[in-house]
Image 1 (cartoon, one colour):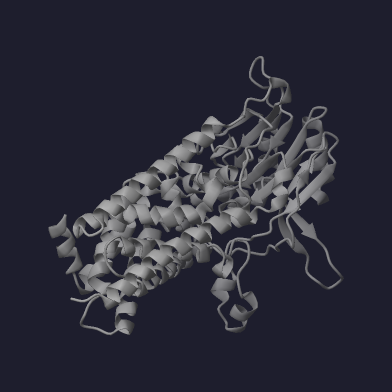
Image 2: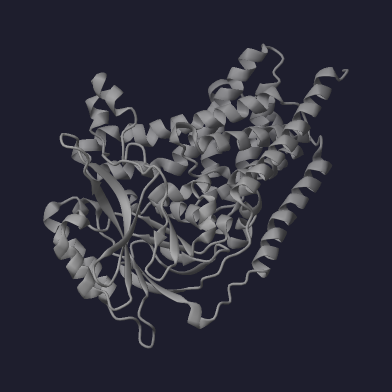
Length: 531
């Protein structure tokens, strides 16, 4: 290990950045659908050794070293995000004749931008770099801060945060309920980097002790929380939820001529008889934008829904909502979810708050048009964001907390009012991305929101993965990706005690402070240590 570490530290130029890129790409194997937990140990061990060779190089000034470690982190991040997000380009191939030109922006441009955050992480770590265990703490501090920034800068995109690599099963997910996604990311980088101590032996004993304690705490807390789960609700209190997964090709949904047929396919799955001996569903859930027209302007469609629903049943369906303003002003369109009762009446609605850039709106559209960048302006968009999030009230008085599509990847999107809800509702349409890692990554991230809030999760996706998740992150039942079917699941109306989002953020900043103090204390000692 010492010989290998020495050879990696001595790498220079393009070979150094190529290895950093490869190390980041290997780390992406820890993400769904692969879930290779050990991949990030390899990834961050290599990064620490590369940082050792760059951060304290005696032949250059601190500005040059800072730039070098920033570029090293950028190369690492570019490999990680390219390997983890290449599938985004699939969405542009649905209408390839119009948007194929934008493939490089999605496949290369977004990873290159997100890699800037990892460059910032290694630059911060480089300022605090010393030796032994403290440099691992410096790296954990830098990455924890960078992942937090990535959740809201430029509207935020915390997809594939490092912490997800350490939360692959329910027992591994419970830590997020206490310290949040970014707290887990901080500690994950710390633990994943510890094998690098074998390269120099300095701080090895302390590092291994810390690693064992943290891993035991991670799994121990998970086991404790799962053992205290009180999800044994009586059969009479269960609500039967039917998840409709129609598996409609996205190109077909864009054709006006198929809209009536698509609507009838949803109705057929909704009205199918339950399995022999099973109760009929109380709530039927359709995916995001499943209604292929403006529902409020189509009374015949509402009448058909009333024909299909039995007495007391409720349909919760994703649809586009239109809002007309004053004369001369264009209408505003919202990505919404409706609650419709057995009489075909709309009983409630909620609009999407956090829109997808370049998917539901084009950032700086007016500026781009003024600059003549018409290709970018022509990208899909046209939706407006809701000013506030609304809860969905069902006719029986229960409420659902709606997260439409990728809103489920943002831990801070869920407000304190979620505690009064029966469950989280996540409707999505991942068919844009085909059979790629994207839908599996999205599903894992949605599961974490159930754990963090202590609420069950109802998830309906056009092509999958549709499921009901317990507050502990356990999958009650699910439909596989690209499985055209419906699924009737008993929803137990229970919750688990959970820290609030503010408390989780406090715990995260305490962890960041600890890592910073370890790093800066050691750095001061390193600077003034006599040879």
